[in-house]
Amino acid sequence: MTPRLRLAGIVLGTDDVPALTAFYQRLLGWEQGADEPDWTTLRNPDGGPGLSFQTETDHVRPTWPSAAGHQQMMAHLDIEVDDLATAGAHAEAAGAVLAEFQPQDDVRVYLDPAGHPFCLFT
Image 1 (cartoon, rainbow, N blue to C red):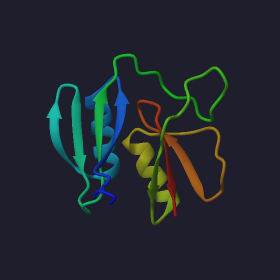
Image 2: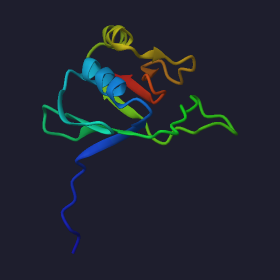
Image 3: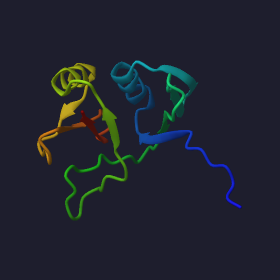
């Protein structure tokens, strides 16, 4: 018998927990939950998985797109939006950087302040 399993959250490592928490709070508008020096959480208002951030003192920004010999991306977030241009402007105002490499016309890849890629798509 398979036990009940439910994805409760996604954790991103960073060398600056307060800055990354503040960025995703501006981007998503979610409320903060736990607030400890090396760990914070943001609550998903829809009840889905939340986001958490933990200190990794040796954090190395991932390279996008991936390149041999460089830090690889371990995960990325896919964020569905109603309007790609409006959401992109919002992401940049929150502190995201548009990645130079864009693999698809209907998706925009951005980098958060710790270098984690995330995708906006319609």
